[in-house]
Image (cartoon, rainbow, N blue to C red):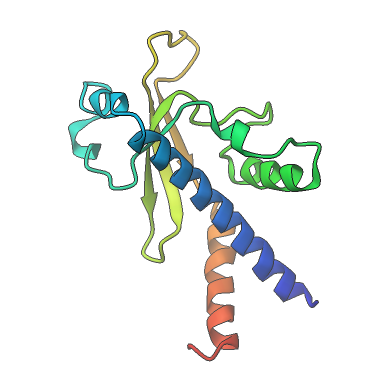
Length: 155
């Protein structure tokens, strides 16, 4: 397989894994009405309460991913670490947060803000966490999408 095909495959995988994380957060949010109450409290600014992708990071994502010492788990965790959704410690970036992601015009998640909702927020923990998809990936992803369209005759 040529190098550009490997690049296409890897970019797709990164995009898919990021999307799966935010979809998982969304499902966690929808499964517990208590989170809606938190969103409507003073912790989340009113202007952001209508985010259609709103989710919650309730520290259960790691249980859904295979162990890091397995090939599949290592690849997934490495990918999420690369885009910044997991920390080097293996913890979720948005652990204990209401998560409000944003998509770009092509449907990719490109940024998110998380508001801590716990009652035991430690003094060293930020109450608001920001994530932005790495710029180099966004550039590569758009380039790859253009290449794919040319290859499949959609351009």
